[in-house]
Image (cartoon, rainbow, N blue to C red):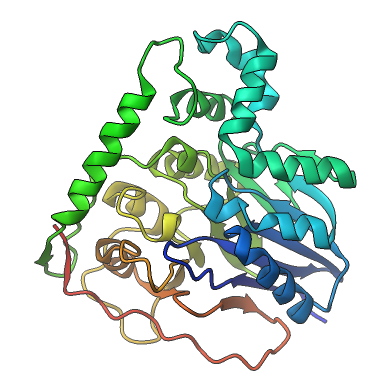
Length: 362
């Protein structure tokens, strides 16, 4: 059989959106199974069932990647680690760097105590570590340049990751002296107020309005992965923000990725306006087109993992911006999606894409 790949974006249906991605690819007769995130804890069994049903009922998974510690990504991976023989678990653990981080946290004098506190703050990945240690699963660091099967990690670097741990509103007060609990409370109040006053404005083709707010430090920690399979350039972004995407763009020439030129693009953070900008999208996906491409003439596919019940995702502004650059935009929303090339036929039907939104968030 010729080389092939299939990337499955599973339906993670809840009040909030989540990410669970299964991949299988074959190169020169060798096949790999690769999981990226598992949605919420309740999503785990459906992810396991999907892999068993469509990937030949395997007992082994080659690679499992935890993109970042949020529960809508890491939670369901417990089932994967428990139900399969996993070759390598790729996961960043902040407590693993407690010695290096200690001077940056004023309230701690012991690396051991800092590590303990960080494990309490990030229970999802702490639970995954426990399972991996019980089962003897090898844990490796997915920092920029690491090779995860056919995929290369584009972001984060170790230095950037450690900065984000310190910057996070979840972690203890840093040596800089900022009161993070107060900052978190103010941010939450602002977000709640902003949600109540969201307005939509009718906009012409090409007009883009993004949020001035930045995404969270945890989202910026996201492991971004790139692979070139069957002449398709695939970019998986998890919840990466503008800084992580900028780092990805800067690193691209070092792995032979000439941008623009992505063929399959995972839209970051379920289509949030806080994760992208016009400048980032221009550099990553290309400049805005003069007009909308004709049906079936789109230049690439953009996939959004979003739940039907999630009123906040995806944002119309993001859907518009992707189409401005020639994308065919599809989302999960109650269905699982598969994109691939030369892959075994499942009898699945073609997914209906979004229509172009004539308005967007003000």
